[in-house]
Length: 68
Image 1 (tube, rainbow, N blue to C red):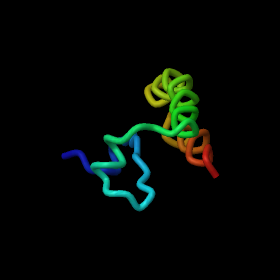
Image 2 (image 1 turned 135 degrees about the vertical axis):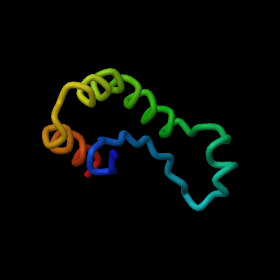
Image 3 (image 1 turned 90 degrees about the vertical axis):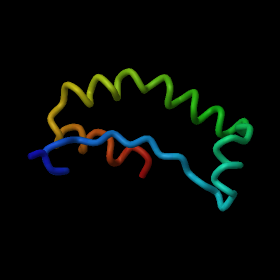
Image 4 (image 1 turned 45 degrees about the horizontal axis):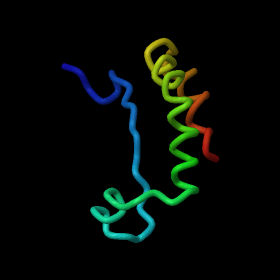
């Protein structure tokens, strides 16, 4: 049987600025939010490739500190 320790999980989170989640998710993006999304989209291919190719330690080392 697989456990959570046997698999890697790729999470894409949506931040909430104290706004009702429905309104936040379905609302229009600000210029700043749009710029962040454009930046993320440009990296998504590399992130997905690394998720498949790198071992879990290298993957964590590379991406867990990206936004710190």
